[in-house]
Length: 195
Image 1 (tube, rainbow, N blue to C red):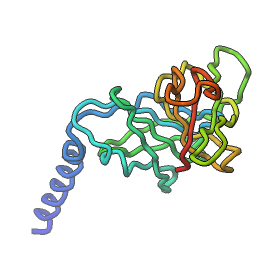
Image 2: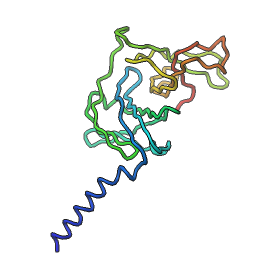
Image 3: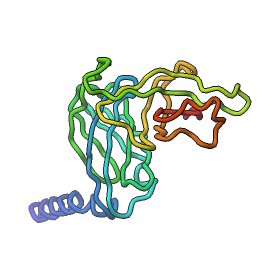
């Protein structure tokens, strides 16, 4: 009787493990890239197809040596891409990533040092003034990456103005609704709301 019960429990566990991803989401999720950008932190970039909502990407985590680190994810509208930031403690480590019912294994690269060239693409990062502040953009520094930035790309960047890391988004063509005399032009990262 105990042997039969043991077989039953084993089959139930096996069925639960294989069925969980299918029940978690109706679509496919692929880890496209793992980065560790200087000033931008650890970034996981996923591509998805199918039926996902923003809520599906709310409770992701990364496991390292039995400890779980939260993922902060944002959907890139209209592109089928999700960008997630995580703790810099993951740098140079082999990790397990959990998101929307899917599990991935990857190695987070060591932080890249700025070389001032070598094919890197560098962009200015600005703090957009909040209501009541002077109408001027405040430079937060420069962000360099291996490939060119695209509209809406997200980075987690250390802001001297705010004294911590915050979300900044790439604006390819400038912000047409801002004062053209103070707008920093085209091709920059900006942030205006502390998260």
